Amino acid sequence: MSAREPSQRPDGSGSRQVFVLDIDRKPTLAFEADDLAAAQEICRDADLQADLTAFTSDGVPVCGPNSALSLRAAAQEEIAAFRHAVERAPASDQPTMTFLIKIDGVMVVTVGPERG
Image (cartoon, rainbow, N blue to C red; front, side, top):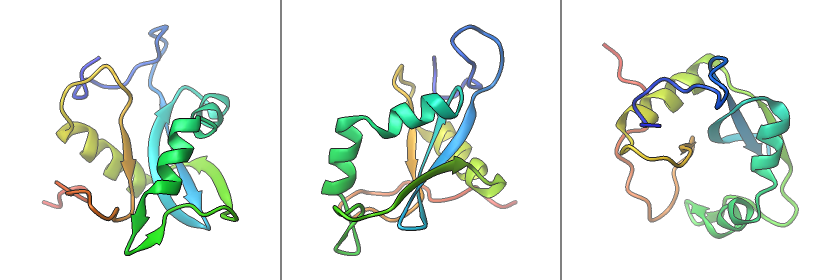
């Protein structure tokens, strides 16, 4: 699937949902999943969790050992930011995840939807 194509469920039954992972009540990461159960599974991924503990934002770890994580459906502005990032991402068969915060050492190409 190209990053520029509309997201579809693998069975072709329609659009996927955008979810946001809040860390310590701060919207941090947006991504797509078929449903809440699939989104929860993505959040339990060991590699993702390792990345979240390794990344920093303004010198502070994105996710510490005592951080509170919560998953929810994305708000409209978060969906727009996610779609904006997907449109600009290189084509890939891998899922796209978008940080909604600044990550130290990562060059940001765009941070939000263009306003016309």
